[in-house]
Length: 424
Image (tube, rainbow, N blue to C red; front, side):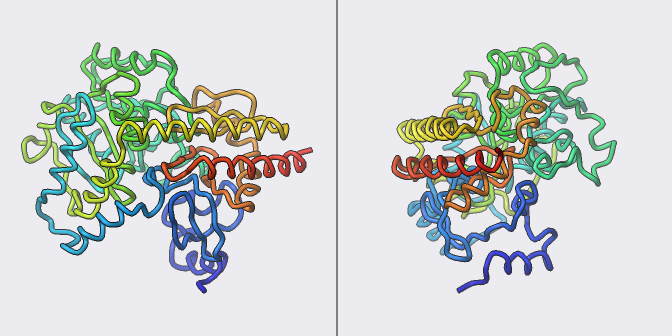
């Protein structure tokens, strides 16, 4: 028997800042002591004390097949037996790059890195180098990793911690970053190198793009020669085979990927048109490198994952998210708990209130009203794990069968009744 969750956390805080290696895991925005995962299988995880949870975190997106999928485990095991890192090119990275490019219309060249943060950071550097311009535009509530220039008005990465910014980020680092409200097309000029956006905002809860918003960004960028960057670290290969570009019919100049394409291993990627990507070293003067980029284990896991994500798989994911969203909405309503569950394809959000937000300011009002932590703990006590932060989305996987979803809905009805009783 391992240590309890509380004793593991006590040990962790002595040797790891805050006891965690990513801030939201500390339960700071929901209160209480985090559970420590011992294992996962399909839609489930088990904590250090042997409790089983239906897991809708799924590592914040990579677990699109569910935990420990046999095909992914086999691919990683086979790759590891041949070596874990070489610092040299491998066939595996060529194969995965071909798979990614084949699926995304307009994407001609891709480079692998080790995280989503590396992907967005590198894409912005590339955009600046390709355009010989400095300024970038991002949107309030969109989280693009923790690179200095992109932390301004970030979403879940900083919002879950109750922060408005980040100490250690200098004024100069964000001097060329312009923050605009989501779902409003900003006015651009010829000093703007790039506009970076989550095509579906999934780091402020879930906020869908308003009709015409993405099309307006494309037109605005074209009018001044700026590059449009889609941060598809969450939406990529989840909305569908073609990601957000295929889903909405709007093609950016650059893409950023992560999560799904690594099958649960550390990975990221950025790519775009061949002429833009040609500015990267060794072809061009924009430098980017990484010792573990294209890691053979991550490439193997990503290939195994993408091979299973055909059109039928995406249809099942959307059907699962629909069943879950509709069921949760009914369970909350029956209990008298005001809730909105916006959905875009297989992505599902949850807000506790009677309006669906359209931007970060509106999402923040609902995220801070104190209801989410109560629902979170009521669910967790009954064996359902949502993310420990109100700015995240739910990630149902292919392993979440109808029976698992229906069990979740029944538990949610009980949890909602408890929360309403506490609020009265």
